[in-house]
Image 1 (cartoon, rainbow, N blue to C red):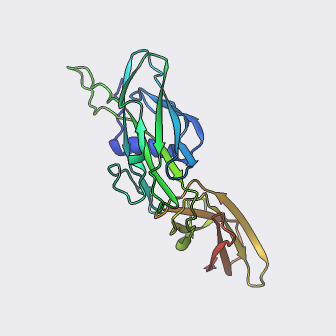
Image 2: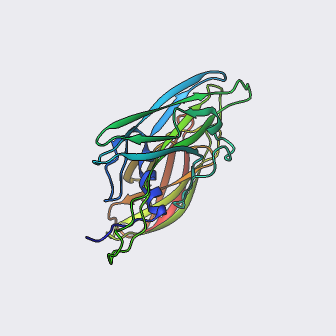
Image 3: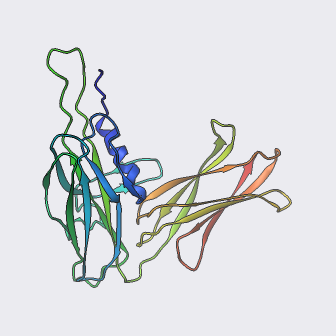
Length: 275
């Protein structure tokens, strides 16, 4: 039987797919996935300076053998070009990694059982703190064993990592500014016309942006409206949002893209599109 091999980058992408913050059971993605992380992958709390909050991570071993796992922290940023960065803990300006302590740095999970890891976030007594601070707790399984000696199988052991975002919202006011920029207008593989925009959090507080686009023809009649709710967008990070339009007669249209960050004012940008 061939050995299934995934790259380190692929393993990180598997973990990043959990960052929407929904409750999931991360089932093994391949024969080499020895652990899984259950529960919500986004822990978002409001805490004032001097306060603390706690959380738990449940690690499951779905195999019939004991499995080790390593627990450590990183910072986390992402951008509209599709890249994600897991920098050393405490290096991103708004990192809260140094506020976080975990109950273990390594565990051994018995066959077909779960182990609970607890963590505590203690906000420093600093009055100047405002907005959102965040980092991640990584849970890393051991690499898969290499193929047996003497076989013709070739493989590099796969290493799967899961990440839990730990976000602290300070009660003190922090700006929720947004920038919208057009990335492109094209035809996708299905023949539909699509508009790609970059949405950047240029403020101090993270938010869950509600994004929508309204498309108007030359007479001012609205011809299309679509809306998306996105996950937590941190200060200094950006995301790409794609809007698809129905088939419409050739001509010039106006697209108005809106971004609601939770503030009283909704941001918008408009673009002329030629169908």
